[in-house]
Image (cartoon, rainbow, N blue to C red; front, side):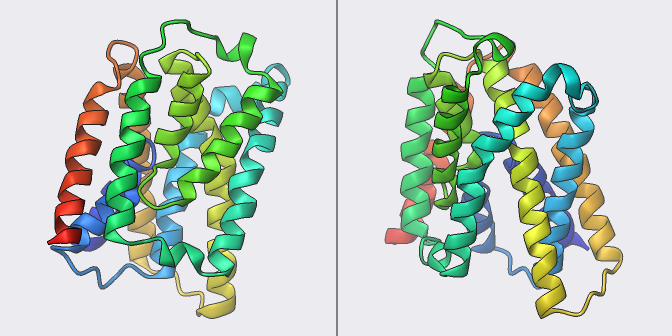
Length: 252
């Protein structure tokens, strides 16, 4: 149960903050051996985050007529990461990239890029300036997050900030982009459960969904309030420190 709680916290927080979930899982796994990190638990964790982001933005989703153009752009911009993700998983290339050295370097490099992007002062508005071109650029950049250590939320916020979007709108774009991505991951994972495992959802699956939902929802709420007042510098510093620790462990 404790392991599931830890995994739920890591999934819920790192999925939406501009830090890397892969970096945290690798770091934590150096000290804790996860015996309950099965495919069904992983799927449950993603389902929890998926339900959280839908619940948080339910007003935007229900008001589909007014926001239909934005959601269409979000859907189109999510295709690159979904399609490339399927290819990398099927070819098992993604597993070859999951090393301490790669995760350490990507955590630092993309943290620095986040810092540079956050320096832009000119700010675009989501409803007025989120064009198909912007959506395509952010969508293509999001595909880079398949490299462990990059961070999906981090790289999409970075891309949006380079395109001069406000911090709040950059985060909102990132969170909305997570809806089709998390949905695809959940469906793909559930399909693999049907093909490779007996469908035997236990209380641990329900617990992981609940806590992943809880921490994901609270993280989204916290982060959107935070960036209305502060820059992203704190997360940059955190990423660099974490990256250096991972590189130390890698080259030790």
